[in-house]
Image (cartoon, rainbow, N blue to C red):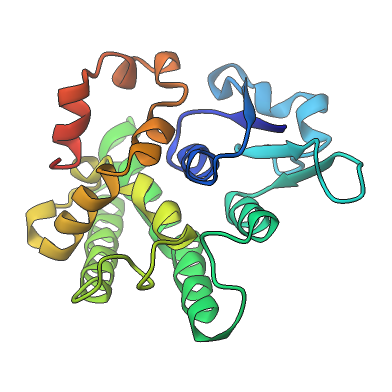
Length: 225
């Protein structure tokens, strides 16, 4: 059994999707980040950066529970645990690692800043809005070029796709016109057509008003499905 300590955010969705795709049994533990659950000592004991998601693998090698924090590390751990969603060696593994690191170092953090300054910030700072919106669009362009002639980011379906996909749900709040990136549009449809992706994206939706109210058709519309 995997304990998933979770909130329904893009980083949280990475792990719920991966667990669904891998068919691993898991139990969801809500971390209410709006109420500061991420700062509680019992959470910090296995997630010292006070961020979700984190997991505890109760069925780890050696028989002792293992805690893992940071979404990229969790994806790698789950892929290696199961032997799925990532090549074990060679150029294929190298490529998946590159695009997973790209998401962790750029696509996620920069889109998060664009989302914040465009949507959440009480003070609208033109410099920040322009800086992060422009970087968001640059990164979507990088992704669009990588997807030219490929069904998935690294060729075969992998943790790279799972890491990147949830960050595209709120493209409008990132000041991105998704139609400008036709390969991304096609890939998003392909991703959301996967039943495990749909299930993973909806884990914990009842905890957020903006997700709880979405019908199945509205979920599909978000991803052009």
